[in-house]
Length: 305
Image (tube, rainbow, N blue to C red; front, side):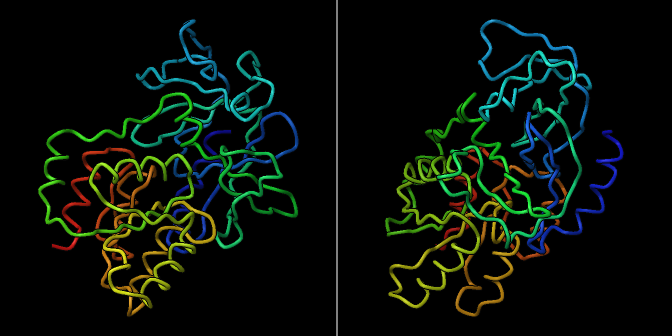
């Protein structure tokens, strides 16, 4: 099953930058369809034999040898409130590369790859009961599709360190002491909190937007207001509902009142492909999540002098 699915990924890369995303569909034990961006997916396998230590997190089903690497396997069904799949011999494994790390996710079945229009994706209403582990929903052939916030799942198992080194803190404090504001655009609650906590250590004020469209609306509204209330730099995720980071950057460059802004794209979707897309939409920098010192240094370089 893995090869027919993943052989098509090359075709779907042409969608990136046009506010469309290719999703790998899977299920966790009932008819509800879930999705994950195909650019996070390395391979789809049948459930391998897993090794487990008693000290492992309750959501970690075990580990196994994947192409010479020992990687953790997370029971995504258990993480999403479904019956665990750790002992289900018929379960499938989605191997992902996420924020410069490789891990596997146990799912019940893997379906297919589909196109999803960003404009049709929206944050899920609280009444649906997904909680923070789903960051967007959309309709596919009339049925609900829930997009999993992998960052939130991973952070619940191993929280990211957001502390800056003393060297970078000193560099930030040595900058000219004037009021600076950043626009942080990210659909993940975990990622937004990480970024706000990081920039607070640098004495930078953050305005927060939950997706590219909200970020663009905020920028346009600020551009019409007092100069001292505008932002100095935009830090945006790439994969977001309604408007992705590529489309946001393109819209900024096409708006005469905004095109002077510097844009840093900050994403768990790493690799050469993203760097090429960053250049294609005229973003100023791409940083793979989550490297506090690397990100902080890039922000210091991009902030106006």
